[in-house]
Length: 458
Image 1 (cartoon, rainbow, N blue to C red):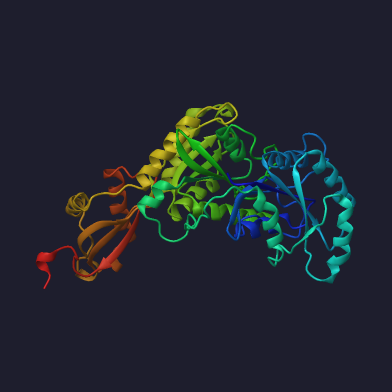
Image 2 (cartoon, helix red, strand yellow; image 1 turned 90 degrees about the vertical axis):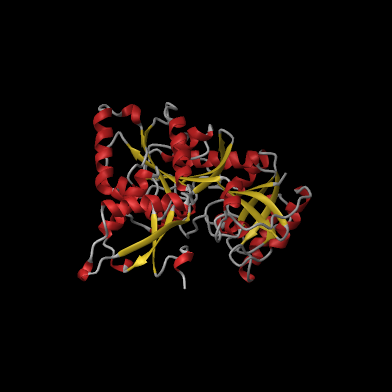
């Protein structure tokens, strides 16, 4: 079993920079402003041939009970409870501060194996701080520079004794390059939950997981990072993303919110299916449905979920309004499933996950070429393509080129002149006749002779 490492320390000592360095990607938000990290974030760390689980945390705080800071501190303590080793990070250039001393006392009481990590140790400015670090009582500090990748060999030496012998994972990381059907079937389903601030995303994630994994509360915008968690539903492995709230672009202010939104958008691009969560207790806004359109444009499967349904007085009216708005705002992905739920009351969760898997199955569907062309024949007979400049556009043949999302190659002449309205006609026909509602469909228009018609080749 891989060892687990939790990174702790006061704000702005470089915990998230170290986390990013260990996982090999910039997935934790990093900024000079203290307190950017709130939830604990998990990743797979690697130093050379050594792999391990690693948690980035918000650190520890003696805050008022029930406050956001106190809940952040509880998340850090939960990470420590799972850890085999704690990296207690200090800023070598700043030296040991009173807050560092308070943290050291609390960490010591937790009874975990601790390694003192002196970050930002490059250059002469860190020498005094390194000498001062001995008084914290954790032995010699490990002098590193997370930003420049220096000193990681010392971290390797500390983690290695905890690791059992196992082969290094040399496979390609998920989401990189083209993925074949076999690789897709082996890996977990990637599911992201997005929505406006305070829509109930973190509450839904906690309810699905059955634990207080994400920070929640009445304050809007608590979540900042896109946090991935491994989970399973009815035996199917899932990697579940909680994301920061996405407001209308004109309302996004401040560097931290922009970084958080950027992280949420990255989660969308990485996902197979995205749940767009809408607070049904509030007036439905166009921004809610615009998020679903954003997901569709990224080629992901979409499920619309109306949260806080227990607080809705006129349920039938609200549902009718959402359905009507969907037809207006999202004509290109008709048939998006709409699920009502209450995460706090644990209602509608099975219905939600059933809709997710049904939509993903459509997103991954493949229609045989013979069926596509029989359908195309009928579609062309009912409504022939237009004739711009007196010369009719000729569509000869079609085949499904790929899945995830379903992509169809259409062969013919003058296809560059095919009006958008006619493309939509074909798209809606495919969606209706092959039960592809709720997933984006893409076309690849290709000129020239039908490459599959061998009898007519010269």
